[in-house]
Length: 49
Image (tube, rainbow, N blue to C red):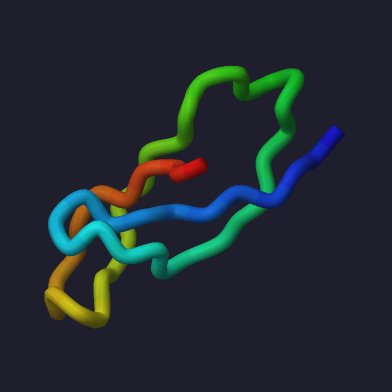
């Protein structure tokens, strides 16, 4: 079962991206390095609630 999750920047705390994840295969929270337009650099984005 795939669910939609939001990714929040660890520096500015804004939710910039949304993605899908398979809840059965990925039980933990996702961490991806994405571009933050507010910080104007690549930062770590974590899955938010």
